[in-house]
Amino acid sequence: MQTSHLSKLYRSSLGLLTDLYQLTMAYGYWKANMQEREAVFHLFYRKNPFQGDYAMNAGLALAIDYLKEFAFSPADLAYLSSLNGSNGEPLFEEEFLSYLGDMSFSCDIDAVPEGTIVFPHQPLVRVKGPIIQAQLIETALLNILNFSTLIATKAARIVQAAEGDSVLEFGLRRAQGIDGGLTASRSAFIGGCIGTSNVLAGQLFGIPVKGTHAHSWVMGFEDELDAFETYAKAMPHNCILLVDTYDTVEGVHKAIEVGLALKNRGYEMIGIRLDSGDLKALSIASRRLLDEAGLTQAKIVASNDLDEYKIAALKRAGAPIDIWGVGTRLVTASDQSALGGVYKLAAIQDEEGKWQYKIKQSEDAIKVSNPGLLQVVRAIDEDGFPIGDCMIDEWLENSGSEMISLSNQEEIILTTHNSQKLLVPIFRNGNLVYNLPTLDAIRTHSLAQQSLFAMIDLPKYPQGLELNLYQIKRQLLKDINLRTNGMVSSPN
Image: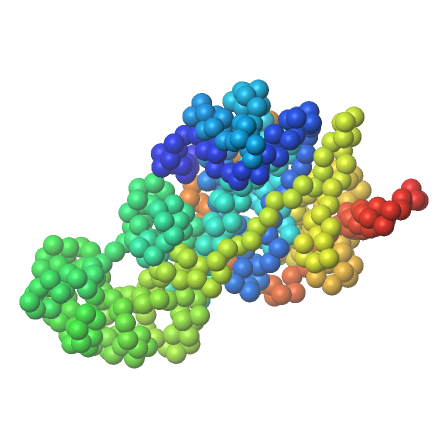
């Protein structure tokens, strides 16, 4: 079983990895004697990142690791007891803090497996359990899944732009902190990168680690050729030479000299790296020189602030680059700072234990939430290709194949050969029931998903609400509007 090693990186208790308002709401539930009342929350996002057509789900293993250890330690409770309100008195009663200390995680959680392509408004995680617990885990779940999914999506876009070439993640030095770097390396691997320069990520997650040398290595010698020869002697089995410290073409000539010497010793120079300048022209010139020297197997690695747009442009221009090293623009998701995932209440039990649907109203249609115990059903045709995603309410026994499109409110009937429920059981009554796949298996699933959906016209891919669920949502919105206007809706 895979582990994300959060407890090795941090202290075992992460109960305080939350916003204060989660704790003040928890205190309010406790004061109102509502803390054990069951509720359903959904974690989802509203807009595809990078103005794209999908997101690559990631971060579930990290979330599982957090939830397995979810608790409030004595040190956590001592800190909370030190907090004061505006009147100078303790913010929380000692009895409430004792309740937190004794609390045992008991929620049911369903989630979409990592490496699955997902779309807006679909629940990535569904939480059902005591409202106080479901509320307290909100912030951490959003923190973990938002960033992981964002970077996995960016990586998938870059990998697709590379059209089968190898992509390496080189972004640790520009990442947002230690955890940002580690999470980015893991998510980039899920998205399809073949390796990382991040050695700690290699140790913790089993990601292949890759690297060459820096300009400082060349600058540390009086002569560039001497620098290359010394590196080749030290690393004959891992020799990729960075050729653009001074004159790039001249650097290639010197790398060829070293590569031929390695060949005479029974080794193969892996290749050269270009990190600046006109990558198209330099890669073409480098390929010609390497081939003329008989080093046809030598790879050309390119870096220098690459992203999916630059890679696609270089591919179109015919640049003979074999391996793409992508750093800053990948691990920081430079063109979009956050995914924007949210976590919304969809149902709660009343005092008699009856479930009540809940919905968030908004003048902005994209912010109106969906009620119920949501599941996403992916319809599959007879050739195994997805043909549409329908959100259903698992409490409704009469869910059919008709759905209302989320994009244009049109009615769609999905004629399916097969179907797949995207959310799978993860925890039941607080116990882990999910057999967590290896990171390699997650990456394989991600690449299979990318290949599958590459054959689909994603802007036209149907996504919607099952007809009966759509009607419930409309009635709830109608009732809210009537209550807001001081009226009571007719039961008919």
